[in-house]
Image 1 (cartoon, one colour):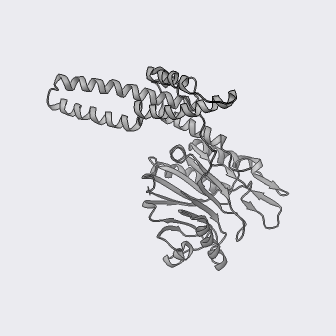
Image 2 (spheres, one colour):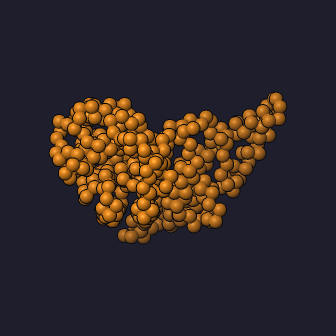
Image 3 (cartoon, one colour):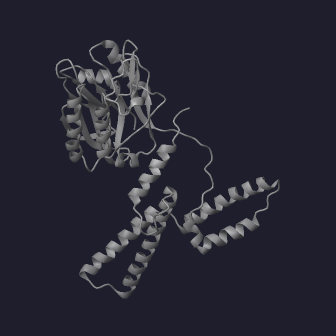
Length: 383
């Protein structure tokens, strides 16, 4: 998923239209959120001129006088719109992201310059959140405020502590996470060069972050506006070969211990000690992978299969008495299902490094969130 947010400060000029079309083509965007169009009407012809080749759908909120105006464009083959919700300064679309077959909500916001009106916008978001509570929510926008003093620099700084606190409270109360901007520190520059601020951000809920944990936010070049565009994409990294890993649950299986002991004694590599150790671990990794496929398999697929089989037997038992053989089969499936689920949770706990959690009493959503947050904190998007 590739998304861009851009406050263009008016979409009337031909140069701005060409620049947006160029960015959409250059970055191969799936969606584009534009703020401050300063336009009261929008038509299909202009939308297609902006998007270029390919199928496109769009939604628009008109400007109020000489300010505002929100336009959201997206690839209609990749995102199928279900509904649109709007209020002052906010335009939300809900639909199906086909690549992952998941429902998500993208909210395009242009926050007012007036602080009291911004606070009303934060309150209105609670209504929008209720509308899309079962969806993955992403808010990409010009918030027109900063979150902390370091987000603004310059000779004429007007740092409103109350406004910052309200904005930070809104993010925390709404259980949103800000995706860090990499490569750039500020997104808005005063034309006379006396001040610069970070006003444009991307906020997501836990469901969005868990679905796409490797997304990064980058700042583009500043050309036609006093804002720079920001765009969201999946991080592309190649750290080389994967390290050797061992899950504690494997040590409880005799077949695993026997495999390691027998193979370790069989290996015969020549060379200095560290080289022999490295080659033994490399060979052992291949053997363990084969053992895992044969003795453990795909845990999620196994859980789904066993659950379905148990449900079939339960359905029969609701109308007819099960034979002893089928009762035994169901009991064995229940035991095996419990074992596989406990093993899966134990592996999640080990990955998340949550030491106070115990096997069999795990919260999968919690551990996925901890794993993703750890990955996000340790992520290096640029040097």
